[in-house]
Length: 140
Image: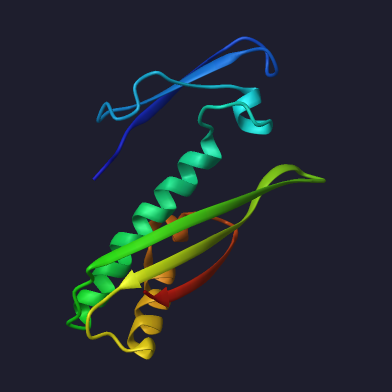
């Protein structure tokens, strides 16, 4: 299985403008810039997209782990907060924190905790990130 996305950048780093697209069309020439990445201008940036991918991937991985425990989630709400810091080696994604709330009928706190830890370790996006990944998870 392969997934494809592309980006085009035009101009200098601070004054240029980029556009990111995905093969599915969900992202279609979605604009990004220095200001959307390093300042507070509205718009997307690569780190926001990574956080979104991590939240989505983790939620699905948790659903799979709960299923293996014969539990069906009513809902899983995941927020991924990505931290990027300027280190001596340059800008680096140093951490991702997952805030998770699961509504899982019949789940004990122990079963939910086991499933969340397994999902965090097994999520393909977690595996690709070279960053500290922390998590707060609770049954809702």
